[in-house]
Image 1 (cartoon, protein in one colour):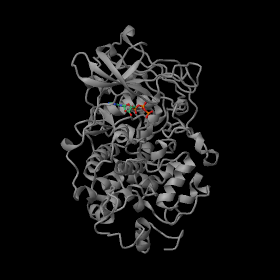
Image 2 (cartoon, rainbow, N blue to C red):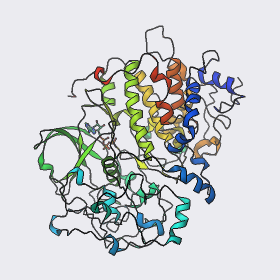
Image 3 (cartoon, rainbow, N blue to C red):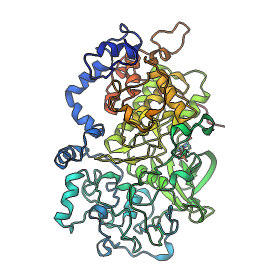
Image 4 (cartoon, protein in one colour):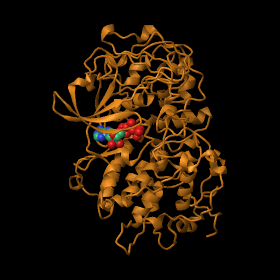
Length: 600
Ligand SMILES: Nc1ncnc2c1ncn2[C@@H]1O[C@H](COP(=O)(O)OP(=O)(O)OP(=O)(O)O)[C@@H](O)[C@H]1O
């Protein structure tokens, strides 16, 4: 194989042999029928097209041509999913760019002013950027809690009064609308239908935009400063300016700082978000010990005094300094609560309710099911890596959870071992949805400053602004590698170092390997030429020293997840259907997964 000029495209038949060599280090070692390509071919026969659509991987085909988009949009509607709550609605008003109508959105419930807890959701423009919302005066138990954005959205779910002409264009462009939300199987109750709206939402809000897609989520609260204030936020800088010691901590990741940078400037009037009316007090819980402290919250183990159930309480860290550019309730937490309240899957941590109180009356806590461990802690304490069948058990659960999210148009954007909880019943659950967001079509530019650096895919490191579910699949590949070897695969010290580490193992890409690579903003950096894929060396099929081995199929799955070109990277469906999970050793039953002593 000629170095540097090899087309290793998985779609290129002509280059297949070279490609096999590139992937495996040797031509002979690759057995297509038993490997992933075999699996993928088999899998694709059935519904490859649908899967790709469900997985948002066809984004590059979403051109601006309206006719084309209509066609795409029609097939984009995801299947209905079982969720805890049906409607999650963002700026439904904005589809026609009109100011909200108070008549239509007034809550039918009388709101006792004294009982309302007001939380300022603010951002760059501080006290100006506040949104009001009111939840119904029902008890704050989960079954009655409406997703927060819905409470904030300030608009009836379906605006029947919209003029046809006004909607038409948006419908053509962005069919998978939340107007007919993917979670909306019909409006379930008057309470869900009616969302009160603040008098204070400005007509000139930048969120009054014409979008019906799930990205409307962005529209509800200003978020510009979320990332910059975060202790772990890395902020976006060019690769050239980065040096290794700028990353003192590997867990650097920031929020959607610039996701709305193309939006109009915010203009909001004063207000409060009266969203927690009726929520229980945190005094109903006895705090037992602090489990962990993250960027956005402090997590406690606690006991529900009433039910005696052990739970995890995540206290949302408020941005308290009014003179800072942002203060108030962090958008990331709002997103996290909303998404987690909506999700219902065994591999996704269950948020039971939101409670308030504590030292400050306005403290907000998420009440979650409690899991004893996270994978980071477990791996740090294990004497040897998980066995192959244990890795399969964990990977299956992770992929099932991710399939649920991707099918519901949610990208997690921060998958890493510390965000994968595990209990002594062998269950794995995905947590920390602070970075998660919904996506839609056409894909809009999002911030690339997501995903903790070690688990961040090359397209983000190279500066891609348009991305989708493939970013999670890369992180899953990194997690799989770490589960097998018990050490991080790409522990980069800076973004540049991160890319160099990736290319050193997977090969330096070029236009043949990854069409479009050279047009990424950060692709101009001089990367050392590495023409071969060295991944197999790290995960050998045979070990003479008794180390972990990875079968041909296992390697094929790992290599498919860690594919540089996101267009060619495995989708969650493809990964789940991979033959590795069906070959011996089979995935271990959860009942037989190892248990671990509690953390000290
Ligand atoms: N439901 C839970 N049960 C037990 N432990 C949990 C639970 N949720 C979170 N934790 C622990 O708390 C840690 C931090 O939680 P989480 O990641 O949600 O906080 P965060 O502030 O968003 O963190 P980050 O800084 O990564 O964004 C997790 O890594 C995990 O160890």
